[in-house]
Amino acid sequence: MNIKHVFFDLDHTLWDFDKNSELTFQEVFQELEISIKVNDFLEVYMPINLNYWRLFREEKVSKSKLRYGRLKDSFNALEFTISDGKINKIADLYIEYLPNYNYLLEGTLDLLDYLKSKYKMHIITNGFDEVQHLKIKKSGLNSYFDKIITSESVGVKKPNPKIFEFALNQANTIPQESIMIGDSYDADVIGALEFGMMAIHCNFKAAENKIGGILSVNSLEQIKDYL
Image (tube, rainbow, N blue to C red; front, side, top):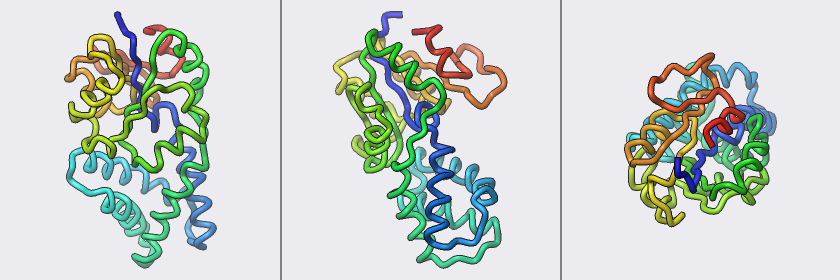
């Protein structure tokens, strides 16, 4: 491999979204006196949230619909009565407080320290612009990365080839010298491969890697086997 530039996804790849999100909801629910257990809420919220993000990537829902709808649908599923005003307040506080929690996935800093002298590293993320930059700064990741590309700054989301084209232009590189690393098979892996880049799938929740022909790892440590 003639790789010179490594592009990472952020959420669920380096930044521990699940843990940080849980802590954020705990704070918000306590502040707003929402009388529901966070664990019960998250059990229904997490799959609903993932589905909304899929629809968001596919341009089928707006940012505001994602932020409101994932909460509204979760409370409805729990048969918990709550006003639209309070849902919107939860949505606002969640985005405001989320960057204050910055647990990283196991092995993140060790991997980045290993790679930093060998490659130029960058971020391509579909997350909201105002939140992602704060996450990267507050978690201490900013010193590792040269270019931070958010979907909002480009106007399209992974796997749209335009975001990969924009990111590689910003990094002054070409697909043949670039690799994408991320947890989303559709957005990160297929998006990068179809653009001509190499890709590694962070398949952290699977007991084994089952996708034929795709470089896949169960931990960040395993990425060292390829780079």
